[in-house]
Length: 452
Ligand code: TRP
Image (cartoon, rainbow, N blue to C red; front, side, top):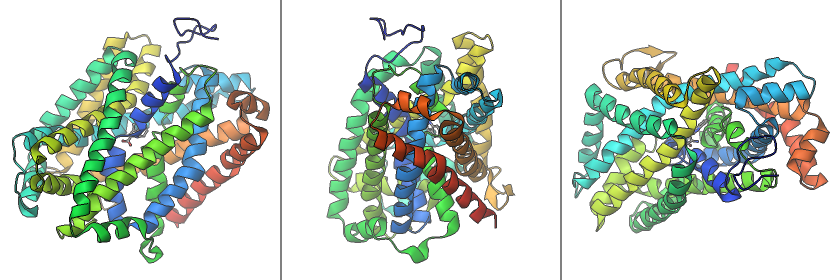
């Protein structure tokens, strides 16, 4: 039971309300993954069939693992490494399970290093739109703005630095208060602006083609590596496989329904990604751009829409403000595990945040330079930025997710998970089948398929 200060009998802090947790979890989940990454990987992987596989991964693997992470966090009442170690001891299992949390933490560090570069692009586009750069611009002019940004190490590093400072400041001060309140305003704002953009997209002559591309599956365009990308993105977009939801779950009050909360987060996240796709692809087809343009996709399409619509300077600026905020609520959650870990090793919160922030910033330089000075450096046919993205999203997240599934499904006793979930026996059984068999088998099969 919590008392008025939201601290349980065991002394662990709790969220102020169910809404607060939903918003924090959704704030972490909804980010560049939805608006930037989902559209561009859908474009690179042929559209509708990829979307269908992605939705399947979300429902069959993402949701059960999200439930598992929140459950482990609430029952373990610790940081990711601590929670798994703690539970393993209580269930009579090896403390080595804590390593799963450690791998996740390393992943969050690497993801943040390149995520901050893209967030920096969003930040710089606030100013570009605000100054009217895109008004009346055609596809070539908009493309030139983007390539000039990428070609300049100084500008990329400058925006990256600004974004890491913003992130570190919030984390250093502790997250809960400012963030909870900000997210309540920002999330609805982002949805409204996406709907405005869809309204514009519907007036272009690419609307039919765009919708068709996104929602009509053509399985001949689906490769096995696309399935790996879809699986990896399901983890990425739900902030899974890094222990973040374990950390957030540890502050969840015992009365709150884990399953209901997880379903809400998944629906919010999925709807925002699909809205983003619906806004973007019509503009791609109306302007003869290629859907497979890669990471630059939204930065080369949406400014066209803003440049052509009445009030585009205002809408465009607002849109990039909201995108920046969506990214910000995610970067905060990405820095948190490393900071928590440094604190557990005796640093105070401010020193921990500055150390972690500086480390991530330095690693981010690699991604910034990979777009210009170091663009020829490739490994396994990928540039450094793509390589870090591939390593984390497509390998580290699923492996950690597999560890979480095995731990929650097999190392935890059925009685423990039943008590913690507190749902009907039928739903508990359904979740158990998903977490014991469906999720682990799917992850392993997708991996083996890509190895051979
Ligand atoms: N889910 C966020 C997005 O879609 C990114 C993110 C935040 C993340 N925290 C994470 C990804 C933890 C993986 C793990 O943009």
